[in-house]
Every structure is written in structure tokens, then in C-alpha cells.
Length: 334
Image (cartoon, rainbow, N blue to C red; front, side, top):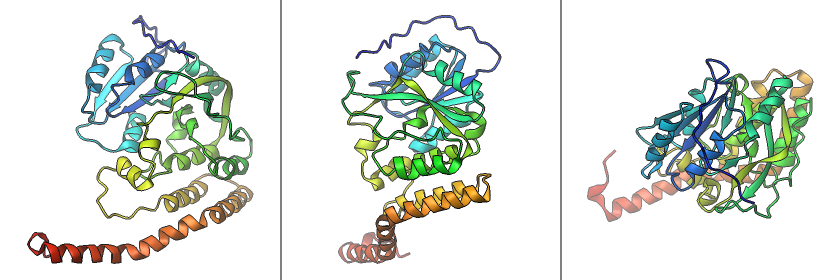
């Protein structure tokens, strides 16, 4: 399968002074695949959008590529961070710069079919209860070939009118299995997304965000394959499979030796999502019941994190004594 990602510069007629859709594309050193992603966005059949690019202090040709596209299309707004602010902070930055009624995150290595935005926006325009609209997804490789891996292995029930069913479906039925959180790249209501904590600087924050959105409203899946998620060796989930390495990517200021609690942060995020959403007492009880099931499934991982927290100061105390013994002149007195 080959996608047409050739972008032809054309005059775009806007429907109003403000774009209906804001597309936020955070990028860091993405010059190898960035142009294909930009072309797939700029050839959308729905043209009333702004494309916000936040360059996270890239050191490759990302800046030159973006500036060339800005010169060709007035819908593109390019921003460059003076220093790397971390992966999720850069995702949050493009949202904060958005002005449209609807918002979509885009990745520099993925592709969208031309009808992606149009069909997702149509759902949101005609269904006030829907907060996230997203199409079916195929995984592709570097050559745009569809991979045999199936993205439909975890069918979602997030279209349910009951918040506790949407909550359970995500944290137990879906997230307990291999799940890529691809709904994060759907089209969302910007005002609803603003009610969430956005993406925190910890592994699993995308799951917490999707759960919060599910408590605030329904999801709707467009039954067509309009999104092509590129599965390659350099994507963060593969290159940084260790949660501690991923935490450093999410937060470059993370100091060596700082303890992180990946599952613990997700657990607290789920609790906060329930407590900060206007739910009936019955719905809250049902959500906490499902969270107890999640806790039992992940209790071993949580216990390991607590044990590590207990021995962490002792471990670094031993390491410091070794350093002092071998290099006493290089160790500060306090």
C-alpha cells in the first residue's frame, strides 16, 4: 500500500477568521520522515485548519524543512524551543498554542489519509456527546507498507453512554493488553481537552489523559482506515522501552538517581481523573470498583516500586561512599 503524500501548493479558502481545527505537531530531529507527515496533513479535504509545529531544539534539518513549508502555506505556524523541554511538554505546548474549536495531535512520522480530519470533524459536529473522534488505524513501516500486526485486537467500548463502562474498557480491557493509545491522535474538542491535566512527565501519562477524556464524554471510531501509524525502530516506545529511559526523554531535567514510579503515577492519575470529574455517586463507586480490579492486576509492579523506593537511599549512600573512597578530592563536602 502506497499513500499519496505529494503536496501541491494551492490557495486555501478559510471559512472564518479562526480555524475550525488546530493540528499540533511536536517534533525533535525528525527530518527523515517529517516532509511526508506534513504533506499528508496539508492535502486534507478539510482545509480550515492551522498547523502548529513546535521544534524541540532539533539539531538536524528539521528547522530548514519547517521554514520552507511555512513559506509555502500560511496555515503553518512554526515555533522553536531554545532548549529541549521534553517530549510530553512539547506535546502540551502545541495544544497551548492552539486556537481552533477542535484539536488534533500529529506525529512527525505518521500519515493521515486525505479524509481523516473531514470525517472526524463531521462526527463531532453532529454528536455533542462525543469528545474524541478517531479513525481505524493500520501500522506501516518506513516504506509505507502495511504491517501484518493488527491494530484492532482490542476493540474499544468507549462509545458507551456510561462513564464507568468507558473507564473499565480502557484501564482493564484495553490497557491491560498491548495498546498503542492511538486515540490520542484523533480529533478532540479543545475545550474538553483543556479540562484534563494534559500529558504529565511520566511513562503512561497518555493512558491517564485518555481515561480522563473518556470520563468527560464518549469516543467515536470512524469505521475506515484513515490513520497510518509508523512502526519503526526509532519511535520512542521502541527505542526507549525501559520506563526509566523513557522518563528521561519525557523530562530532560531528570537528575540521575531520581526515583520514578511509573505504575504509581498512573494509579494516582486514574484516582485524580475520577475525583475531578462530575460523576454521580453511583458512577464514582463503579469506577473505583474497576480501579480496585486494576490495582489487583498491577499490585506486584506497585509493590516492586515501593521496595525500590525503600532501598533507593541506601543504594546511593553505598555508591557515594565508594566514590568518596576512590576519589575523595572530587566529592563535595555537602
